[in-house]
Image (cartoon, rainbow, N blue to C red; front, side):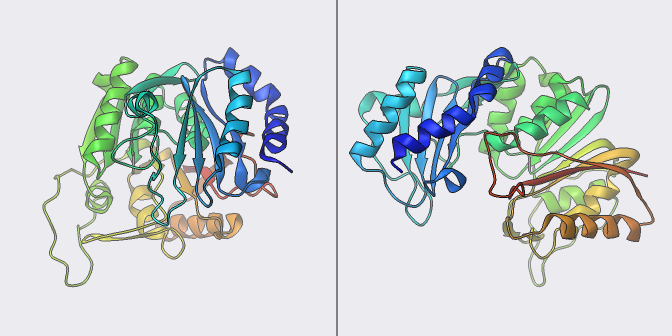
Length: 335
């Protein structure tokens, strides 16, 4: 099928979602998820006042790009930005004309369920400052944070923390290693008038988590530990754990395939009895039930229990082949 036929079909499937988005003050969502919808590596999203087209495997021809633009502009005549990220390092590699380049590098504001978020379609990082497939996670914390203390780990631009604060959390701590991401998080808090409830800590997650859990801060073998912010042992009503697939630092290794427990254990210890820890794993090869069972075993080894759990499934603008989305999110209420 042609790209225009595939996109038309994808839009038809999202008819109800797009109608609901308009009613719910949401102007950021995915309209084409190419891996599942027929063109591997092509994603098309709305980010506020722009359509963002991204390719991760193969560059679009000018004719293909024109086909897509025509369909998108018929839906809503917004600015169309194309980011070709098909090179091996996933960096944006194509030039834009002067006006589009200026737009892509300027700060924009979009809304999700009435919550405002800052966005920039091209910047020093790689992604547009808000992961749209995590909408269900932001909705969960917004609905379950009133009068609670919230710890947002690997917070990136603090979308989760912002949603929690807007939902009435009395204290939100956002932790990320990137000063750039945290600055965007501060902007998100300001946009929604919740800055007083939010704290932003630039830190490697391992020392932050281990201190909060009351554990000794250690490091990888023969690695000299750099300086890190000092924190006191604290437990939270709601902990959100959304680590990257793989990362190394002097303090430890983030490995969602082989050692999720290395992060989950201290995060769980920093969760109050009766509190909830929301765990995310975005690796497709990690089987959902096996991962869930490993989380339960880890809880039991610490003499605690999972009182209840709730799976949070991605919205229909992020379809999967078989109902098993690569992004797995489960909320565990701990005894």
